[in-house]
Length: 503
Image (cartoon, rainbow, N blue to C red):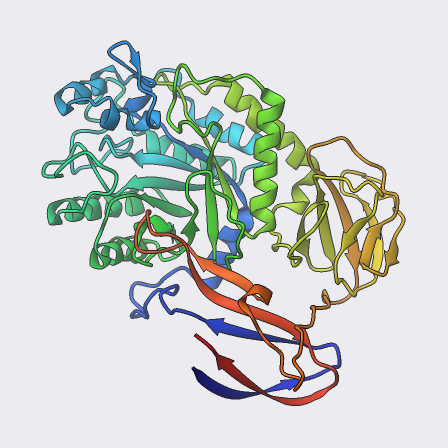
């Protein structure tokens, strides 16, 4: 048991006292020298504001399309067919001679991303099979030197993406099943020194030959802390504001990456991203993938986008082109449908802050100064959309898609602020209403119960929990690293807080 004392000055009778308990320091990257520089606060904020991007998994694995020797490979993502078929290296490598994607249209891809309302594109420059879509000088196993196509696919897409006003990034596999001394074909291989150096050389190529990158999306492997730091430093030495994904591991990433298709229920107060695929079963093209319920699939990913953004993250939604480079029309239709919704409601998604409410009975909220965006997924039976504990007066409420901004009724009740009374129910997966208010947002925090002596018992059950995901490896479980209690004080004044931590 230990105690600590500190003094806080509270101004205003409605001021809130926030008490934080940091449980571990492992959530933060260790202090480093100023060289190379990490992304600036402005670059991080800009990255966080983009919210929605296109992921592309495409490579040699798109040719077999989930089938090998006439049989479906069902127990793994199709981009990892080499691992689970399994396919010997001397049988897999010749796929490069079949790689001649005449239907690949980088300008069309960029236009599709823009039509979907996306702000950035990330493509697999090299996946686990070791085949590079860019013109690397480290190996001839690449799209320029090793295929009939003979063109640098990363450069062409980078140019097309920026021409549409979008940001460009690349996925980069830390493991390489084609490279020499890797002990076996797994996802969590240790990294031999020679492969570490090989990766550094390729990272230097990517960060110096392809213009400004918004992010490098590292993936998998079991690097040492020194290797993770070396890779991140290599990126930042060339491009300080390029965001490095948390899957570089060992707390060296600039943003946290959730598990595949995973949306956190906990609070994450750092830059983060959820990678999602059109189908949970695969990321690379699978010829026999079931594609049927288009409205259901659109609804699924619209809800995912809303959940992620309302919790402060970015949503990176994947497509898997065919081996000839063409986009599966079903996937394009999903993206265009999302783009139509964003065309009306994008203001509630891009450059927003996460919702300040812990629980809402109607859906989700995002916010900007003076505005709350109510993302309604479940209409309450009484038509009242309540914002618990909100103490600001709502000055105006309206549907975001209403170009006339026709005012809706505003009311309040004993349970808190009700933005709308008898709001008309709209039969859409997500309907957006705007609630405007004056001043800074003010929320009344619940008071913890005091004991007979007036002491407040700050239990874990009453705290907001913060989890850290940007850890040692892909398989490390999220860790609780901070607890937060918020409560009101009865009057203005200076207070002494005696906090006792019981283990």
